[in-house]
Image (cartoon, rainbow, N blue to C red):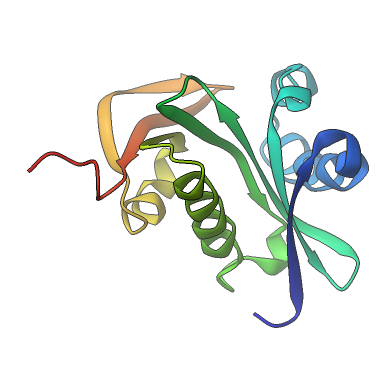
Length: 150
């Protein structure tokens, strides 16, 4: 994956790039309402953005729910760049970043068709399936291995 650059940044610094990827994936491809995707929480989150040269191709946002729990959400990779390890790179970078911050638990609300992707990254399903933006999801959590109870 030497063709891309990954940055952890603020929404203010990368607004247009984040919006371009999320609009293409969530609104155009998946039919999610813009008001659901851009829910007013971007400004209080940190964002990951991946570029191919200078073209934004993938993104995710990280929100701290409390001192022990963060949520990775809005993980999106443009269709032409899927199945190249970019989503995994985004998630591994987000996990490593949160591990460095000392956050012991990470939550994602996974679309059902992506649950195996998150499982391979150490996340485990929690609770019942639910609909979010008319798409079936499951909550998944990852506990940092050093804090996990045996």
